[in-house]
Image (tube, rainbow, N blue to C red):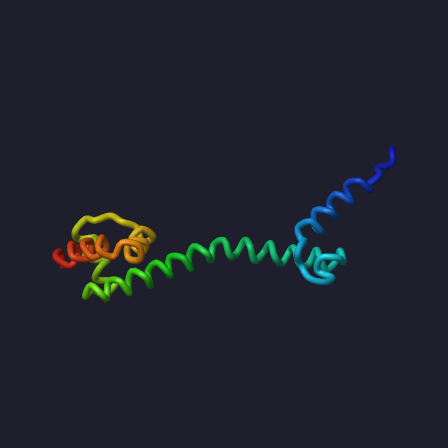
Length: 117
C-alpha cells in the first residue's frame, strides 16, 4: 500500500480556519485550537441568528405599525383585523415602511380599515 502524505490538505484545512478567524483578537486568531473553538462557535451563532433575525424584524415592523396605528386612533390588532375585513392584502414589512416613509398613505389605509370595523 502506498503512503499518503497529508501535508497539503492539512495546511489547506488549517488555513481555512485561520481565514475564517481573521479579525478575531489575540489567540482566537493565532492559536489553532482556540481558532477552531472560536470559528465553530461563531458558525453556530450565525446559523441560529439567521433565523432569529427574521423574528426580530417582524417584531420591529409590528412595533412601528402599532405606533402609527395608535396615532390614527386604532390598535395594531384592530388595524390588522380591519385590513382583513377590507380585503387589503399588504404585508407587515410594507406597512411598516409606509408608516415611516409615507404616513399619509398609511393613514388612508388605516381609515379604510377603520371603516370596515
